[in-house]
Image 1 (tube, rainbow, N blue to C red):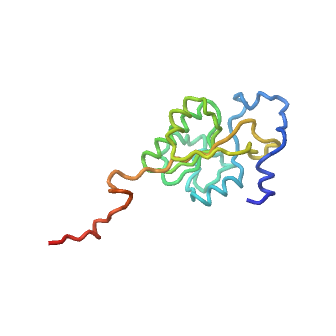
Image 2 (cartoon, rainbow, N blue to C red):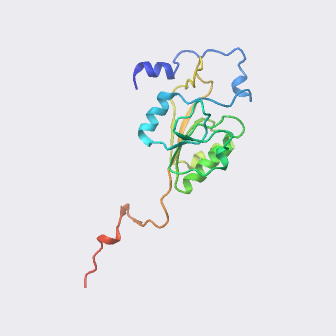
Image 3 (cartoon, one colour):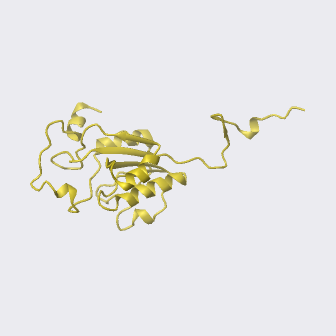
Length: 180
């Protein structure tokens, strides 16, 4: 990532205080648009097929669920990008990401690092990988960085129970020879 992109994404200086410092901790807004440079970096690694929490104006993938489609009631398949609403429903989104991974879907989540919450302990602790973002992210067209730390949480799709793994090596039936 170029230094110009980092400067747009992160703010190393003291955070600029909003006029109402409590707006970020209220229900005034729970939608935080994913920074394009952050998404591009993760998309290069994961190749997302669907954005499960999008508005038509900020969808990151060609396929996406809007609030009207209610992504929580949809089947998530393949490789999903999730930047959920950061309000009271966030626990339901993280639960859905975890449960979808149990059904074989990979879900990569951009969420606030709220390690003191029930949903963090019930679901994020079961993630395959948690990447704590070192600095505060500047979301969308915001003038300042977020007042909270963020994490990239990865729930990798689980292998089918029909796949046979032994000592970390996959054995294919057609390669086995019967010696008589």
